[in-house]
Image (cartoon, rainbow, N blue to C red):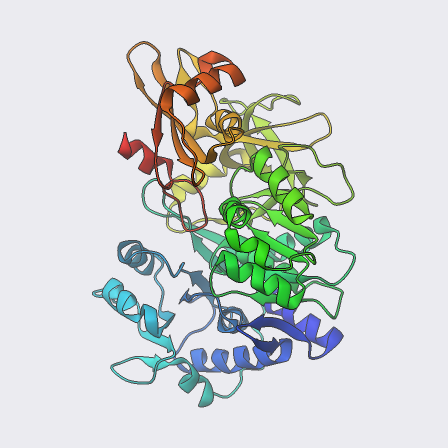
Length: 504
């Protein structure tokens, strides 16, 4: 059991095929594999082997694929760090993860050097675009002088393959430990749930350092079609997405809601032929009905919503092409995964009952690195307690309504911000909106909305409050509104409600 075998089996079946296109160049399956073998040999020469932790902090590039394959080949553990993370959070991960080697790029080297200052466990820094000097090791210099590592470390199914640190929106980030079996099972289930019937050309702009990006990569190895490939972007740029769809006649796009919102409202959309786009997958944050309708109508494509979290490798549920799409639902659980809804006492709720979403299956993490108490609390009773609020309907479709920590208790009643946000999103002047609870003398808490207007639109606080009271139970309507230029977001587009609370 080693994830590297997913890539190897594809090569055995089809021989050399195009894996990704990146900045105009084609990279083949065998080319990336050979690069990974030489990097594996180089890591071996540095004393890295089974169970060692290796940080990969790079923007998207074909070399990231080679890094993953190299590290898995020798039985080491990948610790990906989002290249956009700040110095302080990077330092915490470098120190907490016990990494022995960092693989980064020349443009990120200053940040990595500052972050690792005084951390003794890091023995080497390998630099993409750099040379051997000042104690650094050039990425391609190491590869050029290293013999390829042909052997593959045989791993037990629970041996670690990946340790992804959560975004740390509350407290310090946690290292989510994912095994070879976790990721393998999730890739197989995701591929089956997508029900692909032909080769696809997929735009890949999700960070490969994020769990959503990792499953996109691993599931792609399972394609039974020879012709499909990915069009890899270094990072997300709306107009570049349109240009690449037109150039490569891309049929598939995978992203988070913020990306779709930016694509929908971007003026460059009309300049390019995006008619080849057939389907999209959207996940990582709640999807409003307005965004779903507007995007699918404008680009004449299908959109399939999914639900997941890093602790589940990450996919949990996905809409199926062969099943009816229900508004607001993330579909049914992927094969092999069980989902239930628990109340606050961990009792199962019936269909329609709203409570915490809990998950069981081979995709559930091993635990949090060096955090046994939090691991026990999150995996209590044999279920992954997600912290997300939702319900299952009579047919087993999952609906996400909110985060437990974001729930507002007003006058003893539980109010879910995402429901209120859904109503406010329908206002024609609003581009984005986020709702939080704020202290209130009468009710304990009340609702405050943060609103980003569409360009050229005007709206007052009183007008929006009156609109909300007409659209929903007046008790749920916001009492205060603040108009902002942008909502604070994490690196994958989730609104940082803690930052909104600081603004109050």
